[in-house]
Image (cartoon, rainbow, N blue to C red):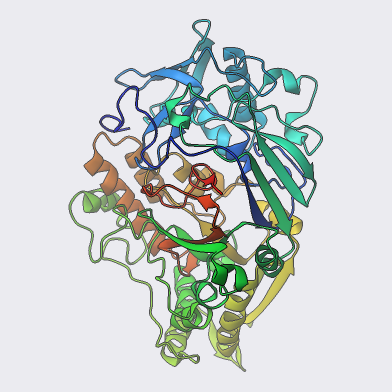
Length: 571
């Protein structure tokens, strides 16, 4: 995106992959929930999330040691003019699908048009920016754009390439478990039972072995198996019993107190801590601002104030974890404390009359006193609710018309930690006179309802990268706020946020890009859409001692592209 890639032409391997890693062995991972589809590229159905990355290959691949840098995979070269008005990819002549047939430019065009028209909404925005898609040679295809978007060449390089002939006569948008996708990636789905498990096996005839530098030291495991469980407790017990051989732990207290079972004591299970330098993202309880009750920012600030973060953090995590202070905190992209200055202030200035308090002058999350009662914060929250027209009347918060303020918190079954968090939070809200309830539904209903924005408040997680781009419109754009299945759960509709996204997409220097992202961070954080909880500045992975990973870690740490991609099995 800016400057030159760090790795030269003909590089041996990515810096965080070991090209000498042995091949073989297996990894068995656990997931809470279920699945009823093997197509990760459509809106319908529940799919094991890893399939999107493991069972399909793209023209180019990310380097998680370089934000905004891609290297060739299916594509042997990429050509982009100075004004980035088009991009042309040349396929590698060796590229093959798992059935041995060649990957063709016709497959590329069909994949892009299909995903862009009937695929998941995440693909459709980029397809709308393509003016023409034409075959320019036996192995070359060119996409010409109808709007300026400097990131588009990179985005298009990351689209999964599917086999056109496999879908002849089939409804791509309705596919479930009846069609096992033919893959151009190192792995193919070799076995599954809907809702129970999926097994991927490394293709011994994978075309990229010894051909693609990007793949050296990656896809080392012979088998990747995903087991599904009704809840986190059952999954942890399966790990202790040896059914799983790797386990991510997000609870710091549990990591310190529960991982002392015999296999850990004997050294058969190793506890690894993986640091990272990526943004915190935003994790917490999201308010659906499509609903009138959450449209007043003072109400949202009151609900954030009433959330007893310090006490909840200590109760659940023991030693407290850091809070997500903003969407891009913990990184160079995060907003600075205090008033906006320099280029950030210049970007925000045209929107000064519409921005919420804190965007320009600085915003910090309200802090509690650390006690269970948290009296000062409750008083402050009640004062904010009164400003918004809700006062205590006969023990309940009511407005001038006598209507009671209340809402429901929607959770998916098996989310034990969220159950603990909401139990403590609900007690505080009830002391304020708020009529609050919690609904726990199965994963299928949860996905259906959140896709349709049929909730008032729900648990929320949005990981963010060091290379934010077009996906920000999917997260916070006005159009996505009205698109069912989009990632804009809170319903953000902010011209200022969209202007910052446009600024970061069209930045011509790293400084301009940083300023636009910091400005966007201020707008989102001061928007008060989410009641933030903690984030993990490290990943905690317990795993069988035979599972190894390179000593050189990527900037992103334990992120997509780390486990299982660069891990290996060694007796």
